[in-house]
Length: 158
Image (tube, rainbow, N blue to C red):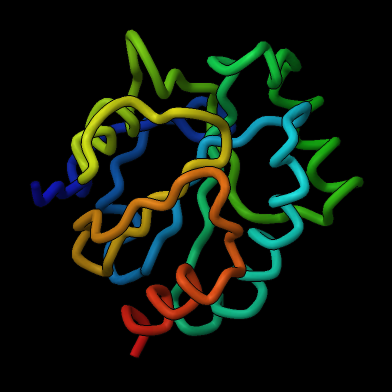
């Protein structure tokens, strides 16, 4: 199923409501993130992608999520501090969300992306093209800087 997120509303880190129209023209990688997860080290690879492709119109957008094993219990300022000091993260973080069960945006919409269903764990990744269409979904076990992900990003940036 083709899913477009352009009109989806989310809340910025500073709790301002924005739609993904704000990012039109950019390729996005949307990720549900957590600070106390076995996959937390993926922050480093996500920042690498942000640094490598940002000048070409690419952005990583992180959505802290505490749905899986209570692995993101902190407040936003604590999360941001941890990410920046531990992994050098400077990509955009948003308000905490729910990615499974009673979901909140953007995951209410993104969970319709094939294979549809709730996010299964932290660090699931959704690739969005310049028109706001979700074009790929990568499970947590797929590293952000894997050839599978980087080739998909580069194809959209070309």
